[in-house]
Image (tube, rainbow, N blue to C red):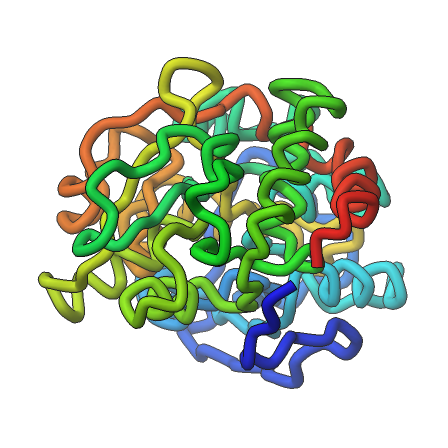
Length: 347
């Protein structure tokens, strides 16, 4: 296996970043909100694994509602483990993740509380929220094929085609420990079955990929010639194109004639032991409605609500078909995906 010089992130302790955004001590309302528990008027605490551009979003929410936002950042698994350890004593009112599997796993662990809300039902498509309304997508993120626009005239059109021998020693991938890789493989299992998914992953491994634990660094590796083809989330290219419109990497939407491009989500949910549940629901509804564009634009992600216009840079990627049917199943298939990656010796 080719080894990347990038440092791999170790999961263990929650990132020690706690930020408070102070606003007026006013409180929003919601038909679903509960008055039970020791509530602090005008306060909501968020554990968030989705940290890009989040502070201006919370500042806008505070300005509009007067509710103060306190937030702690960390990886999705770290924050889930913290919620489990804190139990009924958690200060967290809202959990926000950057991956569908992790929000689903939090629901399975009984860490979330369902929310019945007309605002959420109207704003978030059914396939992008939990069947029991325990979590809701806020933005869409697609894991797609990226190629050098200078060296690759005919890009692969499917995830399976990344295993073609022509890409041997020319493929960059994220490591198996990362949720994006695990959810992508879970999606493959859901769409083509475990046996065929194993064949696809085996073919990737056979191409001696360069593993890099950063999508930004993956795209820069494509430009540098360390690889010609890669997998990365669409918003990373959007961000780099915003900085440099001539950035020489092209995006291809995979599997358009079958299941569609792998769809993951940024999602949020009210925690099971939220001390400020009412305010958490207000924030969740705001993120799904008034704050939807601000939230998605902050990271060049596609809004969960398709009626909301995406950031301008995303229009250049063209229309696409996304695999909406797998989103709810990524958490349930996570363990099988991890096992498959290990068996295939995917690093």
